Image: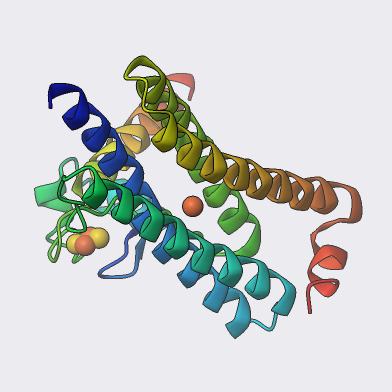
Length: 64
Length: 154
Ligand code: FES
Ligand SMILES: [Fe+2]
């Protein structure tokens, strides 16, 4: 789904940056994506996706 | 006076959701239209217009109660990328809204504002109907498979 409507950024776009670039905060995310740069109403949702992606990754590594 | 402002506050939260709903369904409608899914477009377009009428009724009620309707605040839109996800986003939205409306109705009962209560019950009724429509779509996708379902929406 679209997380940042102002800039057309999806949850998958964010997950990719977290996985490939290791972004762990919205500030780091902003270096790669324009997320939250307009109205800012998507920042909370973006943070939640970062957190969940990191949790998923950690679980994956623990199992591996 | 005190009791009136509780009603106005809860009417304003309901209003925020309706204003959000107008935009969410309007965008989803036109995304469907762009893909040629005319039936889904029609349904969502109508929903959006209905939300505008519901918002209008709430705005008038707040003004009648001598409050200021909050047209500034807008909730976050939940916009899917594909049909299935769009239907899921709308379902989640409806469930949250229905919960919120029930809370607002309880407030009306506590404050004995039966006119506002009736207005909210009418809106709730329509919102439940739309949730039912959404659940039907999800059931059909499950039964027919996505491809056949989408063919039926042209
Ligand atoms: S929705 Fe992301 S900046 Fe507006
Ligand atoms: Fe509505």
